Structure formats: structure tokens, C-alpha cells
Amino acid sequence: MENKDEEDLKTLQLRFVGKIIAGFTHEIKNYLAIIKESSGLIGDMIKMGKLSEKDIPEYLDIIQSIEDQIGKAIEHFTHLNRFSHRMDTQISSFNLNECMEELIALLNRFARQEKIVLETDFQQDLPPVKSNPSMLQLLVFSFLEKKIAGLEKNGRITVRTGTVDNAVAVKITPEGTFAEGDGDAGTTTGKIRENFIKQLGGNISQGAAKETVITLPVHGV
Amino acid sequence: MKQKDIKVLVVDDEVAFANTLAQRLKMRDMEVGTAYDGEQALSKLREKTPDVIILDLKMPGMHGMDVLKEIKRGYPHIQVILLTGHGTDRDEEEARRLGGFDFLNKPADIDYLECKIRKAFQEKLERTM
Image (cartoon, rainbow over all chains, first blue to last red; front, side):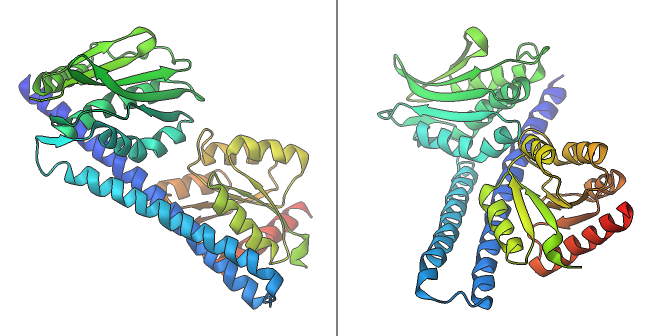
């Protein structure tokens, strides 16, 4: 039975990392494709002899578009880099908002493909948390994955952060219609989650309408 | 045969990509429209039928393969070129089975894409003659 749990955990971890890498490479490839077409367009315009002063604004617009794509790509690289380095040490002091922002940015494409809007609403004055950020990200992913799969198109999921007594909280609130048969309870993933939250010294509660609240002690495990 | 006669619809959820590619094809004397998801593409077909569709595969909502099926069901003469950054061999096989004209990796060289569009248009003309 223990082996089965370990196997399920490994499957979840691999699925998580796989999703993150697939989404990341997809986004980067798209930015590069836009940059390639934009620079190609500049080449086309030069070859066509569009070289008078009145053409300058059009050139500047295209250059701006290239800069925008490069900016987005750099932001994405930063998120992936931080995400990877979180695994360097198991327990660390971290900013919960940054940890969640990075996760949401890396999973956004995955939600968008299902026509689900992934939103954040963060409390700004949160204390730093001493805990295992990678484990927390995997835990939040396990809920997001389930809710994204369960929601019908045009749904919305809001990830909020805040404080509850002496703990910080991540609240995941889905809005929309759930397809029949969706449920979080009783699955092996549920067992993995229980194990995680035990290790993190926190708590998971399910609210109405499939809302999930994860609380973590500020001073950690 | 003048390329000007070719009507193209570019379907891609990356708005900046679709618009820039459309602009480049227009500069090559084609009449080009854009749609940013599968549903929008199918609804545009009801207004105006293009000769060739450049279709992305992975889009939010309706998957490109389902869009291809719908196009081929309702408008069998339209030639569809799949242009995707993430297609597998199996996707290519499936797209060809469903009647896709060609399967290209994104980003494609513009001259190569132009050549494929011209070939697809010729194929359409031959089939409808």
C-alpha cells in the first residue's frame, strides 16, 4: 500500500513538472514565433521600399511589439527559474504571494486552453512564511488541476491569499458549472494531500461550491 | 493565375501572431482575414468562404483538429494548412487523414508558407473544376 502511495505521489509530481514545462515551452515558442514574424514584416517593408518618414511610426509599432514579446518571455523565464530553485532547499522563508504568482503564471496557459480564467487576489501585507514552498505549490496545483478539469468552459478560478489568526491562507474559489461526476474526496490524490498538509503543519478545508482553503502556520513546520 | 485571387483565413489564438502573419500575406497580394479561435473561424466561414485556411492546432476551447473536421464536413473544397508549434507525428497523421492539405511547424518560413498556400489554392481549383 505504501508503495502504491509513493507511486501515486511520483505520478503527481511528474504530471506537475510536465504541465509546467509544456506550458512554458509553448508560451516561449509563441513569443519567438511573433518575434520572427515581426522582424520578417520589417524586412518585407524595407524590400517594398517603404522607407519614407511617414512609415516610421509603423516601424516603431513593430519594434515595440517585438520588445513586448521579449519582455513577456523574460518574465516567463524568471518564473520558471524561481520555480526550479525553490526545490534547492526543502524548508525556506518565502513570500506566499510570489510563490503563488509564479505558480499561476506557469499554469495559466493550461487553464486558458480549457477556457478557464485563472485570477489572483493577494493580500499585500503578508508576513514571510517558513515552510516548504515546493510542496505547497504541488498541493495547490493538485486542487487547481482538479477544478480546471471539472469546470465547464468559461469558468473562473480565483486564487486568494490572506491571513487567518496566526496563519496564512490560500483560498481557491471556482465559479462556473462543474461537469457531472467531479469530486475531490476519496481519491488517492486526497490521501497525498492529507500527507502534505500534515507535513506542512497546516489545514485544508472545503467550503461551499467546491471552494478550498489551505492554511499554513507562519512559523512553519 | 494571380495570387490576388487567393482568399486566406488565418486562425490562431495568438492575436499578435495572427495579425502579423496576415499583414505579411497581404503584402504578398492575398486577401487575408483573421479569426482568434475555432468557433470564430467557423462563424466567419458562414459569412465568407476562403480558399485556404491556415489553422493552429492548440487553441482555447475548440481544438484545431475539431475545427478541421467541421470545415471538411461543411466546406470540403476549402484547403486547410495546419500551422502549429506543438504538433506530433500522430497529429500530422490525423490531420492528413481528416483531409488537411499540409502540416507545417510554426514559425514557418514565409516564402515556404506562401508556396504551400499557392499549391493548396491550385488543388482547390482543380477539385472544383
